[in-house]
Length: 255
Ligand SMILES: NC(=O)c1ccc[n+]([C@@H]2O[C@H](COP(=O)([O-])OP(=O)(O)OC[C@H]3O[C@@H](n4cnc5c(N)ncnc54)[C@H](O)[C@@H]3O)[C@@H](O)[C@H]2O)c1
Image (cartoon, rainbow, N blue to C red; front, side, top):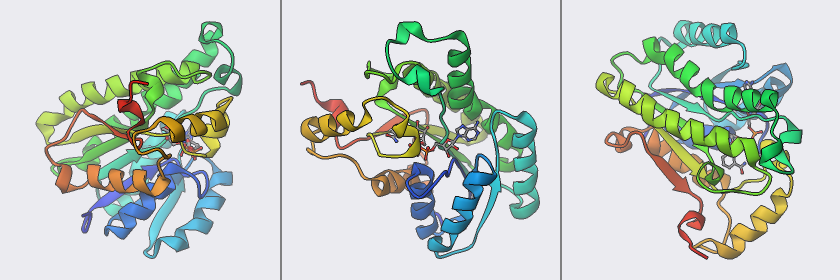
């Protein structure tokens, strides 16, 4: 599905990261990949993992909170690969104390951090990548969660950030559509990752989804990876501005 395509996937922290599952699916489908980790510590894990891909991939760091690092990343990709056909944004952060208790107690600083790292970064990355995608019918994909649409206990400000992220997907899709580019999100069911461990009561969420989802189980990271590979591939060339639920049907159930 991705033979001859060059992709940038951001947000590998370890082998459990959704970004890593997407990298494995995209590599299997023939993509040339550039993978990023937030910092040198995560880059070490990423470098150790890359040999499992079965094909070479470039790795580097990028903290999306630092605009000069985003610019440097695009310079790196331009120099090494010449351009980009797709970008997958798998980045979210909120201070741990914001992911427990009541949403009403969210601090101004926590709100700004969560929205900046988890939502604004997609817009900044997309803008920075536009010159690299020029004339290539690019695809931008991000990762969201049901907490954008419904109240999930303890998800709090991250739910508000995901709502902003999903709205950004629609506005970016309208901006980039005339250029031939697509922008979409996957709303994944809960997966046990580093980011998820920061959400108070996460294990209870997994149990609840396994009992109530249409398929009576939790989604697997590889299933999100395969859906992502489809969404950034030419097979999805008519799809933009949308949020695809990859959640074993949890979100369609009423009770
Ligand atoms: N795990 C789940 O249950 C679940 C469900 C739906 C959506 N998601 C979303 O999937 C995406 C990936 O998360 P994950 O679950 O794979 O966890 P993860 O912890 O493996 O990945 C999160 C990544 O965000 C990165 N990050 C945080 N702040 C950053 C910054 N300032 N600059 C650059 N990178 C930064 C981290 O380093 C990490 O690599 C997130 O957007 C998350 O909200 C996760």
